[in-house]
Image (tube, rainbow, N blue to C red; front, side, top):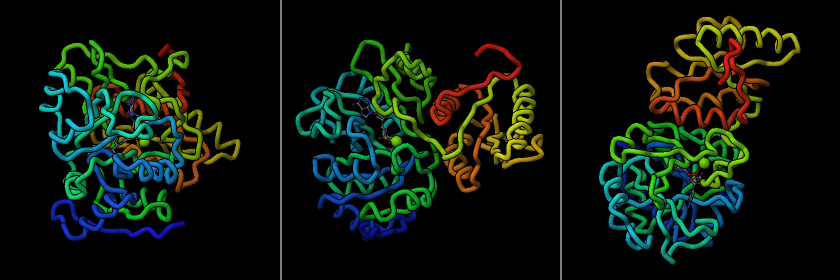
Length: 354
Ligand code: TXA
Ligand code: MG
């Protein structure tokens, strides 16, 4: 156990003195959890291999899973990569600062531990004012995975970070809830056609508007014969302690199937959780019913998703039935995280094929 200092920073009214201490801790090789617009990150000086090691240790993260390097200004990228293509420049201009992570051929300034031996490095420039200011004050690029224990849902609220990392990191900056709620989109632009390795805060539709054709990594569909090109996508992830099962189909069939399964599981003495939506929550009369938000607003579902998954732990749900949602806009990233939380366990309600 190490002593963890918890520092409150108001994103709309940043106290620079308080943030300066966190920046100095980063520069001196310490590790600091901080808010971003997507999820909280656990940061270390990206140029300091020993500091980066501490991040892997605190999270219990497998060493073959590379980290994203965060910068505060576009110019900072030129030291870290070999080349910035015109496609990359266009994407940076359109989506940075913001929840898009791009892959580049790495320069030799980036320690191999960050990229887990790959010759590409993932880089993003967050838009959250605390994240931006912290990186700027630290005057170093900041390697940061999500600030959760490996395997758990990513933290979108300060209490999630405190729950997972208190006693394991030097500083936790508590700076409110994350507005996007799912992690950044990871996009490989090193080949001819850009490939989404992880769907996230910048939607496929947004990317297609700028790029035309965009592919998705085949492994995203849960095809276990395909090795994911983003190493992190192969791990079970986002999992609450209870078993998660997704129910897909048309909405009435979903609700009826969940009601039936709930009866069965409760008869066995299990505590049942239901991940519902605003449109359906009143239809469940029993169990731990938590709405993810309105089906009409995938952004609100994204913002709540990880907090809802953690809530089922607090309620000690043994089994969680989750309604599937439409894979449009942020719904694509939401369904990706739900499928991973469920280990791709999906029941098609009404018997139709998925
Ligand atoms: O929104 C986010 O991206 C958050 C915040 C903190 O910025 N960070 C985050 O980091 O989600 P992490 O470490 O939890 O997820 C990084 C993902 C992993 O799936 C990892 O495998 C992938 O990015 N990744 C990192 N470097 C890569 C590379 N060179 N090639 C392919 N995938 C890479
Ligand atoms: Mg993560």
